[in-house]
Every structure is written in C-alpha cells, then in structure tokens.
Length: 326
Image (cartoon, rainbow, N blue to C red; front, side):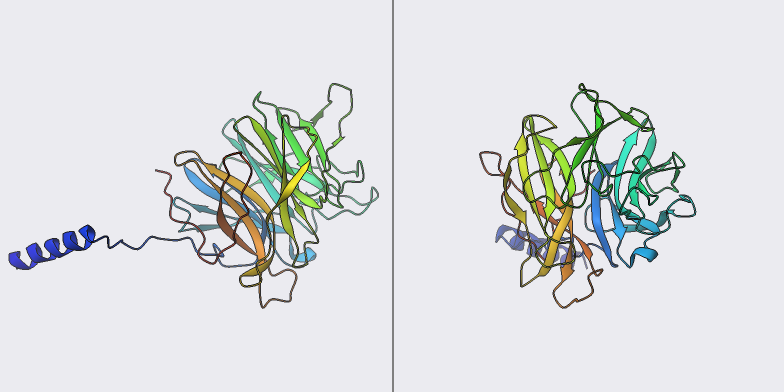
C-alpha cells in the first residue's frame, strides 16, 4: 500500500512538471437559477452580494431576493429580504435595488409602483436592516422621491459615495437622468450650492440604469441604452473629472451576442481590490426566449486599456474564474 501511494504522488508530480493544469472553477452564466434583472453587485463583509429585481409581471414584483458568495462560483439565495408587507405603499413594480452599508446598518433603495405622473403614488423608497440579508423594513414610511423632476421617472436609483464622504443618488427613466445629494442619514435631500435639489446629468443615448465608480481619480459614469424588452438593450459609458460631468459618451461596452444572449444591460460593477479585478454584473435574455420578463443575471470580467478606457466586454456562458475574498 505504501508503494502505491508513493507511485501516486510521483505520477502527480510528473503531470505537474509536464504542464498539465488542474481544472479551474468557473461561475457559469447565468449565475443562479430564476428570472432576475437589474443586479446590484457589491462586496459586503468579505462576501460578494447581488441584489436583483425579481423579473415578472409588474403586479408580481412585490418582493426581492438576494444572493451571496465567497468565491463568485457558489451562491446562496436569501429569499424575500423585503416585500410589500414591510413597505405598505408599494403594490407593484419593486425595482432595481441599490445597497449601502453605513454605521453598521444596511440601506436598500428601490423603485416602487412605476409611477407615470405626479398624481400617482410611488417613486424611490428606502429600507433598512441590521444584516445584508435583511429582513428590511421601510425606513421613511413614504417614498424619498415621489414626483417627476426634469422629466426623469423616479426609478433605477444608484447611490454613490464620493471621495469626500458625500452621498449622491443617480436615477431616472424615460431617457432622463438626475443626480441628487442625500442627507447623511438618508432621510431626505440636501441642496446643491445653487440652491437646487435635482440636477440633470443626462448623457447621449441614455435610457435608464445609471452607475458610477472611481478609478485612478476619474469618474466613470455608465448607463443602459435601448429598450429594456428588446434585443438591443446595452451599456455605454463616459469619463469625467467630477461626479456631475459633463458626461460625454465614449462608447458601448456591453451588448448582445447572437450566439449567446440578447438584451444585455442594466448592470453594476464590482471592484475586487485584492486582485484588482473588475466584474460587470448584468442581465440578459436567453436566445430562445420570447417573454420579455425572462431575464437572467450574469457576470463577466471587465478590463481597461492602457489609457483607462473600458474594453468591450464579451458576454460568455463560462462567466468568471473563482476568486475567493479570503
């Protein structure tokens, strides 16, 4: 028996010396089962988290699930982290979560009711929990933004913390994007230097789904283009020197692949600082699917050229390699 184990070890050493590689774990796409869209990806407490919209008819979108992973490959589902029993003013279209950790609390922002005018009740709400998996409770008992300003529908919010600690929220549908400054406790808005509260920052071809991050001192502003239910839904971006722009469109970096999937858009970005990798988390529609609500959450690596521009992302079935945070 001892001779057998010695031979086994010797064979393994020979294989390694010959350049035979062990199989690498890949995330695969979609990342997890189910119809999920508008994914917000973030690192919280040494774990990867994704907070998506449950994709179905508007009247059935009255709750949200979340997913966590330590390595991008194995995901745990956290069911109904929030629903309209906790947020009683929402009766449909609970959309596009945005998550912020602050002072040992977790604040989940969301759109509710898909309001079409100022006479309908709904808009952008805030919830709070002690853990990222919830349960979340209504923080304000009302929407944070419940009216239409600068022709931007109050949906698709993204909360961004600037280098000075200030919190800004970018939001907007109907081809218009606003930025507002949030109070530190997220109970309301602060005015800008000119006394206004809603500043329009709409870039060329903007539809919805804004996202912002800082890299090498530059502000990367990203958004979705095209119609959410069509094959040409996609993601473009701009680079600016400050959080207010102007945001001059550079180009499209995420779009459909007729051999893999269509409608690739409404994304977020995770920067994993240990290995300095950037991941784009997005939804897309399977090739054979005709139901507009059939959207699945996927991930692929996002890279930059030597000038800091984002390289076009190739959407894949393989996804990304395992990348444990510890």
